[in-house]
Length: 214
Image (cartoon, rainbow, N blue to C red; front, side, top):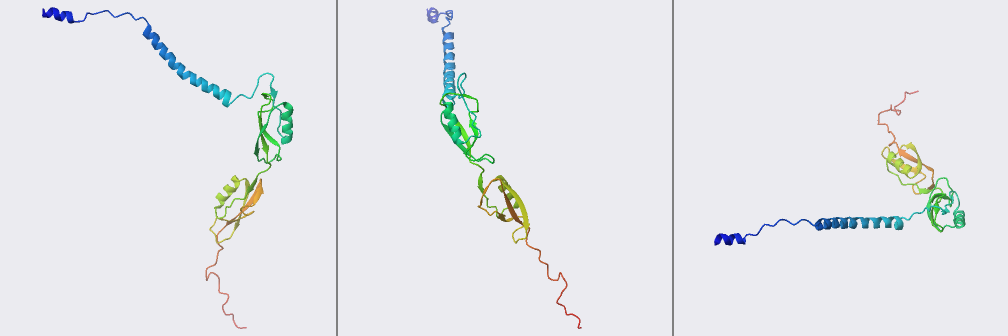
């Protein structure tokens, strides 16, 4: 009959199967794989940065101590490095207001640090006092001219002088612009105080008036 046919076509209910733990294990494997994919590149990058790009210069134990080279001449520093069994010098030249040209003013690594035998070192060598050209500040306001000269390393003195130029403008300097000077050095700026006062006609008595006869 039709009712029996319908009942036969309906699927029979079956109890769900008990989980065998495979899905959970697969999920854990996915998480572990993702963590490994993130951690491994970071670890590799860190190791490359530490040991390739920025290798440590200090050696524990029986390394070669870095000599104190401050104040030594370039040739003396070279002899000290050879005697210590270290490598070449990487030199940077910098002006210094007190140390004579050709002497060491800074070093890396610092004195006493343990280095690998044959390691190179970096030295800063004095070129002596700096020489600077006097800037051209003609026509500038006195304040701006003084600021520019001070930043260049000069000591500035102001003098006022009557001039047709606008009041407060620099009309000349001593030394003149473009002159080289060894720092520290002084520059005098002559600043316009404006044009001289010219008396108006009639401001004074007329001295050409006729005098009384003798």
